[in-house]
Image (cartoon, rainbow over the protein chains, first blue to last red):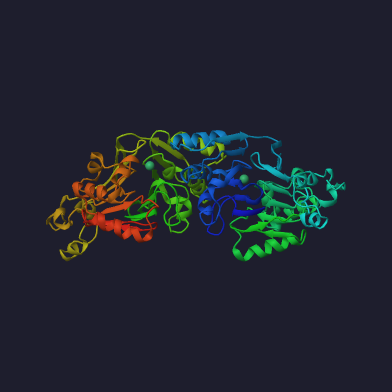
Length: 307
Length: 307
Ligand SMILES: [Zn+2]
Ligand SMILES: [Zn+2]
């Protein structure tokens, strides 16, 4: 599980940062990629990575501002052109359906895979045996959502070496032992599976938020998360401007991370007013409040290890 | 007057060529830029040029395929964000209005300049004292148009040096002479303006065509043009494939140029199946039929001198 930042700029594309897109790479977990937001030229950014558009299984849109959605019609078309045939589900706030349906219809784009569009509101928007995704409304000029992605705990691994040492060779009872059952062997011994199973692996928690002023729901979504991705359009001194434009500063994002007790904070959606030389300073500001902060750039690839 | 090719690829963006866009730079003529088509990431391409989005006065869309329009909403928004306040007129086939209105509305994009959308059909779509633009339907999978841009002839310049030598100093009569009038001077001499005005400068003619199979209207639009911009998605040997996908080959485009008796041919909309090494070969193929052919690349800048 890792996060590949495809666009980390704000509002309009610049030479140094493209507009918003973020790929959650779940190749080991489910041989799939989940995309969060899809600003213009996200498919161009993808050309410079190993990401295969046909592996994109779901796209989550935080809000409908152009710098978060204008790359969608092109990416959907290219995924088809490049041989994608599996279903793609796009989750977005109300309006995403009209935008996509009109864009695809007007342009005569015929997808060779089933496209499902789900307009969501606050609440659980997806859940299967591996993951749960919850959305909550944030505080932006248009409805903007944050996502809390919770991975289920994984069963501990069966310790095959220890079983062999105990003179129990591989057989169908391994499955029962792995499930924690108690089994009586042919030689009369009674074996408790739990003695041969490692500790369960704690599932990871990510919070990926759309554009927002600092707000309670941001803390709620990020509570005890392994990683929080928060916007940080402005530096600490520009709090008034951030408020006016419904954005956050470095310091405000860091305060959210501290209050929510996350393990790590990634700051993105950096205004193009900041030059390459400023980025370290932005990071330092945030680190003064929350040390485990990183200001990410386009193509940053952040691994999210289990604890 | 020069043509700046911003995207010269076909269908989907590649690493070497972006999808379609072409800027007609009319800085000397009217301090303006006219854009022809606007594929995704056209605004990103513009970042690498000296073109100022606020100088874009008109955008002409040949047809509604995604690789020709998906960059429009983002460019329109950025033109506003970057301080554009003058009117922008978008000319496109029926459907362009719905695409733009829905994209701008859903994304909450508020333009700080007046946007006019004109859905056109065959005929003269624009005319002023400098230029006339005519559109004709071509032969593509969806309605695709070509444009003939005719510059009016320019009045010859007044030869001030010759006037001074004849003992006629600058005065308001210069204006009358320039307009070709006959004037009687205070010293009794009668002067014919035409004797002091150079020859009129012939206006230039451009033909910029959308995606198409070879067709009569392509020849019609390009007749005696100074420059023809024609698609050439495939090489000469792929005529069948070109026909199937409603496109043209290098050879077909060159035949149109020869038949129309143009001065120069620029081939664009090159499929990404062709590598950098193939481009020279594509050019040679076309030159075997029409020597004054150039296969253009992204950022090619072609001057169009008066004859
Ligand atoms: Zn926003
Ligand atoms: Zn086309």
